Image (cartoon, rainbow, N blue to C red; front, side):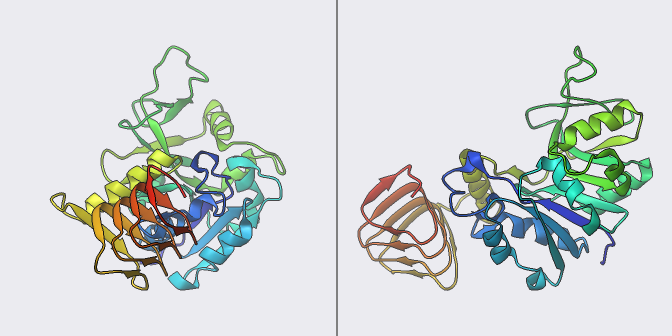
Length: 314
């Protein structure tokens, strides 16, 4: 099913809360179950027929481009909007205006894994005549969004109504009309939230689309990153299995290796004999020396590891 929508993915951020995982990789390329987060985003959007993407960049842009490429691996077109100085969500979107041709488009945070039904989201957005529709949930925190009985947003972060407790969390996925560009000043560092508040104050139709269940992970911190790996493994494997192994086909594990819990092994990696791995996430080109014991660890790209390590990021 081909869709005329484009998608804009935020890829410029530093990923400070994910340090040291983002010392050598942009946040959106950090792997979850051996696949970069942004690959999961693109593949999900592709399943709804979206084949034109724009990604903004700032931090380690060449690595981002080298990993993601031009889209040919998915049969889609990917363009980049580079920011010499980071412009935040509103300013970054405005800078990419000339690359966005579809009247309606999706805006997607680059550190989120979800299974949102974008076709239903689009249908809802169109039915409301909305300029912007934000995907929200009442089951996550922090709660920042207040709506009326029709689902129209009347406040964000208690800007207009100090005495009303917000009931919804914004999940970092939006669907927008191009007229939003008229609301954003060019060459200005600004979040998109003040833009929405301005639209709300002027009576423009800004709605929420609520998801009550389904897959949604924000990998913005180390703990959230670990949780996303573990929970996705539970989704793909029966809970009764003591060991859940994700191994790239071109990696080698000696037959005399003990595994427990979740074990992810990326590309071109070698695990020598008599190694014990428990709840271990190994990225690409990792070599684990004979007799090593690793528990609750994350091993980044191209590391040679020996000895005993617990609760470490190497």
